[in-house]
Image (cartoon, rainbow, N blue to C red):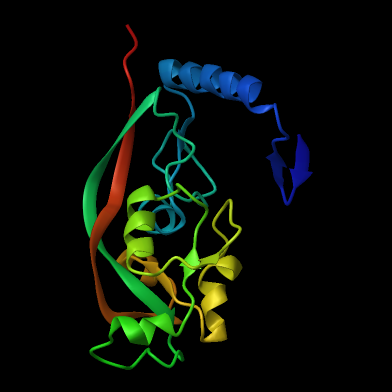
Length: 192
């Protein structure tokens, strides 16, 4: 492992042992009811999970997607959904335009998260000619997401909850015709 910006980063081949160690620690905390860890995406963590409930340890609230949940061990399900929107800096040339067309959007690049983080959204955005400018992002950092749209060229996307703490972003007048999970929960799978 190597230390990077206050966080240990795995090197190739180190994941299996660390994963097993984390599983032992999670089950120990779960069985004793002590120090359960509350993880959430950036916007949901800040809006709904701060401060953490008594007895819970707050995470860093910088997760993207649910990539850290092993589907063999956890089941996740949506608790609610809301429409995804194309977003841009408030000074972007399309920010105040109405009745935008696909051709209007084609003149600008759109941000793309790492592959398979949000597979349904990725497929839909690719189908619509978006998801064109890859962002190297493992954890949420404003400079690499909404900060990228301050160039008044790049387009982003997100949900209303994500726009609340970012006053320099505005939704564009173009319907993505896609709703995604706004609130999700995970539960341990039972083993037999």
